[in-house]
Image 1 (cartoon, rainbow, N blue to C red):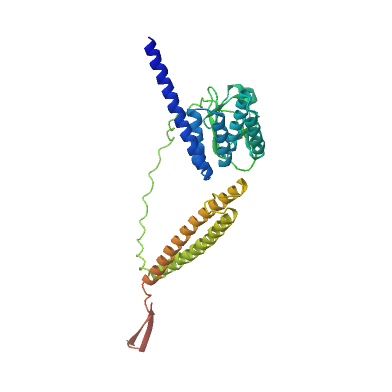
Image 2: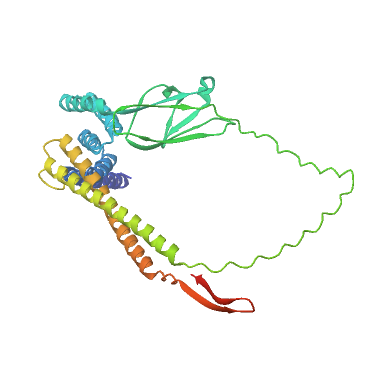
Length: 342
């Protein structure tokens, strides 16, 4: 029996050591990526390290990473959790650090306030924000949310559910959504089709349609003018697209130069402060979008101009005018007739 207990304790200790080693490796990788400014890659490393082996230091680093990534609501919740843990542990230094970061973060928060158009049935509502359930007590209370796309869903017994998608902006403020009164599930019965009533008198047969003479087919029209016109139109569109692409290419170069002026390295690894880093990333994002639009505009414009030139050159030449002179000799007249064809 003692041998079994010792084996179990040894196995448990080995598992704990493996978790600690994994958490430490994840934490170090998160610190490395965070130093490079790769917050979208660093934050999941801190989160997984905290999940494997929770620690106050890892939690503070995770909150700081989310704040730098722009997930202000996540950082706000994590800093509050860190303050509570530091108080329980008596760690006044880390408590003060978390409180300082929380105070700096709160002016940047975006809040969501939910209301209901039917307060009498508020207790029956089941509210879900993204993947998190909310109680009826949350109605009217501003809740911090991360910038980006979210979904609100509300349901109640014997009622049709309601859902709304929205995008929370990066700018601080409060978004208010009103949950409408939910409709009952029961639908109105479908109408019973009625048989058509018989006509009181027999209807006379309709007269046969009068045959109309078939018009003679129109002579074929020359396709040279429509083809040349289409060529000029497509070519003009291509020239406009080239101008569009050139404008966005200039914009991309300008935004890229602005980004380089903010940080010493082009990838934004050496910035004076967090504000410069965020402005640097914003200019780079704008430059990337403008560069893509310039490539699309220039490529489409070149193709359209080429197609227009081909259509103009390939259009058949118009037929030349022809004059026909016919002699007239009859009993009372001697002369000539003149006719012109196109």
